[in-house]
Structures are given as C-alpha cells and as structure tokens.
Image (cartoon, rainbow, N blue to C red; front, side, top):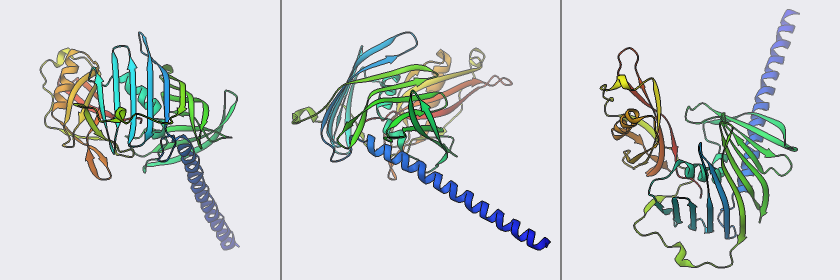
Length: 351
C-alpha cells in the first residue's frame, strides 16, 4: 500500500513538473509572438515599404527650460533617406546610404536631449528580444479605457535592464514600454499600408515628461530629388547595423591619481559623450553632464586610458557614438580616488 502511494505521489509530481514546464514554454512562445507581431506592425521602414515624408513638432523638457523644434524624415528605402532635426542653437542632418550614413551637426557634439529624442523615435529597437532575455510574466492591464496585454522581459545580464512591453489587446499595436524609472507612451496609431505609426510619442524619466513628439504630416512621396540624398561632404560617416552588439568596457591602463581626493567628496556621476573606434579607444570625449570640476577631469583622464570592446556587427568591430556614465568617488579609508564605468548607451538610433 505504501509503495502504491509513493508511486502515485511520484507520478503526480512528475505530471506537475511536466505541466509547469509546458506552461513556461507556452508563456515564452506567447510573449515572443506578441512582441514580434508588434515589431512587424511598427516597421514602416521595412524593405519594400512605400516611400514617405514624416514631419513632427518636438518638445524637449529640461530641468529649467523646454526646447521646441522640428523633425523631418524623408525615407525612400533603407539605403536612401534624409533626416533633419532643427532646435534652437542646434541642427543635425543625416543622410542614409548603402549600409552607412553620414552626419553633420552644428555644433558638432550630440546633445543628450537629442539622443533621447532619437531613442523615442527608435522604439522598434526595444522590440528586439535579446538572447539573454526571457519572458517572466504576461498580464492584462486596463489603462485609460484600453485593455492591454503586457509582457515583462528579464535577463541574467547586468547590461540588460528589465522592461515591460504593453500592447493593445485588440490590434496588438504597441502602447507603452516601461522600465523601473523610464517610460515610453505611443498613442493614436495610424495605418500606413499594412503597418502602423503613432501620431503621438512621449518619453518620461523619473515621472517627468522629457520628450513629446506630435506628428503633423505623414504622407506618401510620389517623386524625390536624388541630389538630396548625396553623402555629406567632410562629414562623419557611420556604419548601419540594426542588430549590432553594444560596446563593453574592458579595462583602463592605470588608476586615477590620488592628488586632490580630499576635495572630491563622496560620489559623483559624470556623463561623457565620445566615439568608440574599432581599435577600442574612446575619442572625441566631451562632458555632457558634470559631476564637478575635479570629478570631470578625473573622468576624462580615466577614459583617455580606457579600452572597450567596440560595437560588433555580425562578428566585425564597427565604430559608434556613445554616452559613457562614470562614477567617481573618494575611498574613505585612504582618501584615494576610485572610478568605475556603470553603463554605456549607444547613441546610434532611428533610423
């Protein structure tokens, strides 16, 4: 009798384990189907899609002021497009070619608010499931009268932040992307052939509205002047690679100097813009967000000696623009300075 009960218990446990494994497998498949469908719907720049002109009014909300400007994208094909951003005191023109694009900025650096703008437009990149990611849960939510299906993705990698992707349950169009302290919202999805594109895009950080994009024109192009798509002369040129791996910090050739550590204070974060070459060097360094005069200089000195694994495209190293976050702190026991790189965000974004 006892043997029969033990055997029955073993069978029940085995069936429960199989059922649990099947449920997990079904959840992974269901979540990935939702994400891939939304990715396909949002890809208005897929090969073979009709040419278009997209014009939008953009507002970038900073701590003490707001900037308002315009965004224009003329897209013929993945190898022929022209994009322009015009803001007070800043202009950027990018021309797309066969596997590359050229860019001219005035002034030459890439401001952080413009990076946030381009990343908001380039939301399709957040619809890519990385190899290290898995679906943790799928749940239904009601938001502003709409019923949403939300997929939470998590990863074992410290470089990949968990995020929740929410889709309209009826149309499967993307509604929002949420991180722990960041959020993207996409409203008024309009059809474009068999694709859709939101008429309103917003980005929030720490609960504050940071980027607002309102599409004013989205129209088909009957013809275009080829001269408007010629590569820019004396401009930086970058390789296009949508699924490239992000750069990784490897090492620095030496520690920071200890002189002046007593004036540093506890912890400072410095944001630095630069370009990572295929050699792994970080060049064209400039401070984007200051941590104080001493911390800024120490961060620049540290990054001058830093080496990275460059952005990789199908196993090949390619150059990239990046923002590097450096934490500089004072060691309490010795007074020595300590620096560490926390996160690297690749500045290549839409389109």
